[in-house]
Image: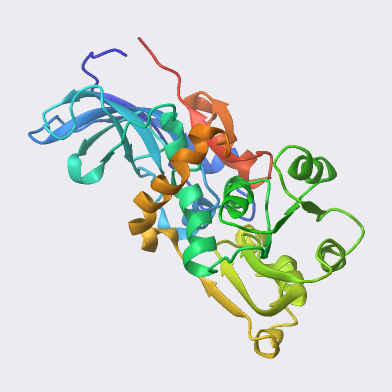
Length: 338
């Protein structure tokens, strides 16, 4: 890793609001000047960037046009004027979509060094993706031993995390949905799911779920909304719990899908539906690490990342993730320049 002085960063910015599915022309790569390294700050060279479904919603207004974008990132400190961020340390931060950034200790988390654990796992199972799954199952749904779990978008980052964490937390059966026959096969043949639904199949999703879980579903982790939520409610057992953390079905639609037609079943079955943002549960991070690191070391859990190489392909990785091309958490590995 070069310790040369870096005065600029390559960055991707959003230049226009998308109309439906984003396209490459909604973004532009620019070169920006970095602020000088003042007391208490450090220069970080980014090694890994995360691309996530929530970013699609940010494009509609949360992100300013022609301005730096936000995103989870892992980098290495290459110059420092901070005792808390020494040169060579690995840090997690949210100055994504760029090759370099200048941070203070308050803006970065120095990553712990767990033997045998790759740093990029802090964007995967040990990062926001795994934390979302863990919070959904433990804090929101209160998963109990032997229960049946259903998760939508099961081949994506949060979905594959739920598929691994649920059995470790005692689930009796885990069912996932995916967008193609090939992905549905991967869920059961490679990712450990007990059953998989194919939303592209001619058989309605609700019927597929009834066949996969004839005795009903206890916990549903929703990443999609729409017909998936309706199907889950239909198959929910009495006192079931729904942890709602995403709605991919409506991110690119100018008109949201119709609400599930069976919402009153929430009352009839005493079902609890709770939406949540993982940002409100950061206090569970150490709990997640204490629980999961031993499983990762023992091979009982595997951090499956869908890796795109090169900063210049960050937009491709993001758009591919929105199209469902990834299996596991979508990340970008930046090239190292000497």
